[in-house]
Length: 249
Length: 215
Image (cartoon, rainbow over all chains, first blue to last red; front, side):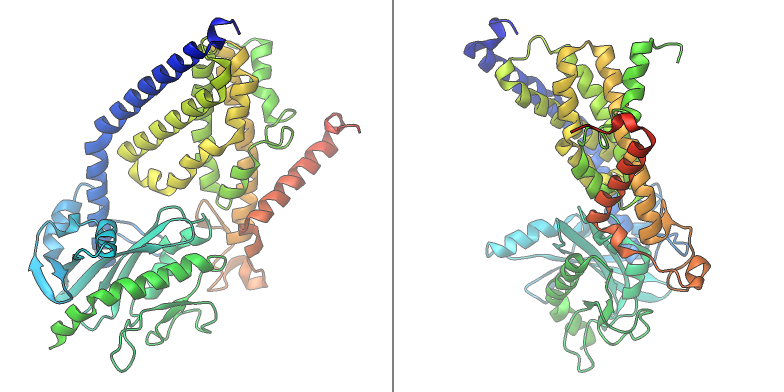
């Protein structure tokens, strides 16, 4: 190295120049791809909501969504109402409710602000589905889900996803074998109290035939992710209970 | 490889076996542990690392004469981080499903010591073309080990390959499971990656005694 590149002035100037060049490059890439990424996120969200209520192209083994190019119209067709619930039972319709950011609402609630709960009401084959988006913590990062329920809070479908759970272990929450176990599972116990769904390691019911026991089979090697999923279901869906109670009355 | 001179061929081929970054240089072990529970993740990590290391080596080589030596590590880190962010953003825009499946792994590339190792050991002292070949060669050498480890871990741990059930259905007890075979869940945990890498090192050195170091 020559003396020139060793001087302090040169080093500082180089560092400043590098930050400007790299920063500008990344800003340019991010801002030019932003609209495309946002569109992808919207499509994904609508696909997930439709998946949870059973509008999908599933075969036996994998989770397959409605195709990207038709998801917009399918969403219009199947989702009849988008609700925003506040204060437990106060309900307003809002056709942009699917844009509500659950993560942001959770932090709002922590700061003492009012939390808005989005709920999507869908109709399929004469049956009504209530799909709630929920969010919680797994082992490494966020986990989230779309849970479709009927008016009695019996799960009709579920879609789980995660940000960074371990491949082959916790990441399996988004596999069919795990998600399908939730279908038919009761969120309330026999006397009508909300209890959630436990992810159980020893339920002696690996085929998950008993749907009123409020538990599904755990994934081996994914204890903390499973606990996170159970905690998320319990704490988040509980917020919807007052609204579901009004449905029954 | 008529296009490449003997020396250039060596840059690509050496890291595949006799100077493999994982089994000989013992670099990149952490990411090899983290992502090899599934074959697909191993393959995608390989492709991403080929891109980042190939291009990163070229960039570092191009600016090698103007980098102040005091902050060269920070400069290298910035180059890797910028490339990884670009890969991540482009995947998110044009291949969203893939980017979601790989989100965590793409970020992990930054922690891969092979990349900083090659920048420091090769790109800082060689021209762009040679650096590119060295980057691609090392990323391929890393990828080969990743794919071998991923193959065995997914096959023995989950009974699947790339998600397809190749040994039968473990719950309905079909295929190999009908004979009493059970998946080895231990294969899915990180320690087994180390043991598989260890076995590869053992096999490689027993076949090529020149690799055994004297002490």
